[in-house]
Image 1 (cartoon, rainbow, N blue to C red):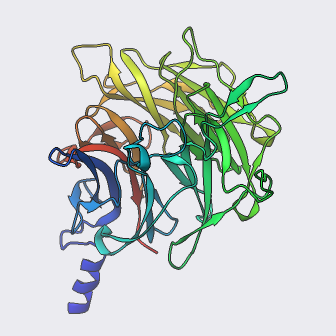
Image 2 (image 1 turned 180 degrees about the horizontal axis):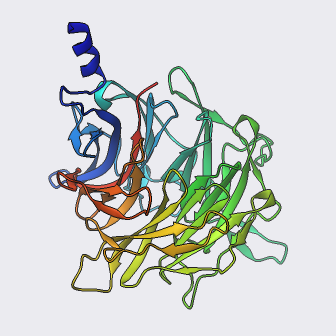
Image 3 (image 1 turned 120 degrees about the vertical axis):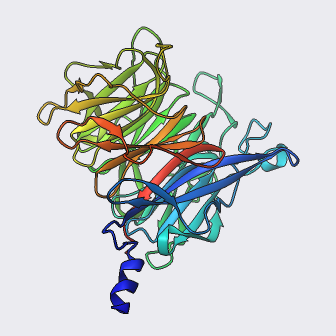
Length: 424
């Protein structure tokens, strides 16, 4: 009997039949007014099976290992977590931060222990500056880190017409991930050499990138706000990224110039959010990672919503959810989730019929995740500094509040979040 009780406790189970079905980590930033410096933290939670309720992990919050954490990735298997600390940009117009009054960004590696506890292992730096996003390949063997400034940022060259051209592009740093320790090793660009004849240590993308996604078909897409484009790479062997035939994809929104705020990949579909026009832009992925506009074109967001900043597709690819940071109805919460069904044949989006749609969440949502058993969804809310939990109706896609309270405290100004099931 003692052995049975011990096993039950190890699995997060109780005598009432509940249990822990996964772990959640939410990034946040607190400000130390005395030191005038921002401190990054990671709040850890256990997710309850029966209620979706969140309870704090032992030792939470954990130091993020840097300043201003903005992106978090869990390696497949759940044993290792990578936190991207953006740092604070300095006054330099090139790829330098710390030497000009700013704080350098970094990549912090954590190992995952019992009950979702995080133990800091070591820190790495990407090749560019101002890291903003990270993703792994489908096997969890490679980590891609997106920087808003490439190492060549700010350098000037002369084009064929004699005009001076300033490099304002971002870049991706690729690392291989050791399966037994989670440690990172730099992967150089085998296709491009620098002026000294050695391989570049990064892969260049467009100006002011804000987010990237790796599709199931082996494409990596970066959203570049600097020129309203998507920059595609094909994901090759040994972590290499290969330029496609058309390496820059221009995006057109509505009446206003598009302001791309996020990208989401699901099967053969890609969804962009356009904050300037309050639109969802759906595409299918073609050959050489080209994006083809879905039949019907752009989709208007739901009425009374505005400023969409993130989209999320459930695990079964049946529903699309869009996070809206503001709205146009003063009688309801400004921050909401718009819910759509995805036609399984055409990919067409249709607003879910529900008088509560769009659904209210905490102020300033920035990220959304689903629990490992696909019962619950959660948003991290930057302005409110909270996490909002919802029950997802698998038959209709409708959302409802958790039974024991839907709001949980994060730390400071919450940014992104990640979820993992049992550690393997």
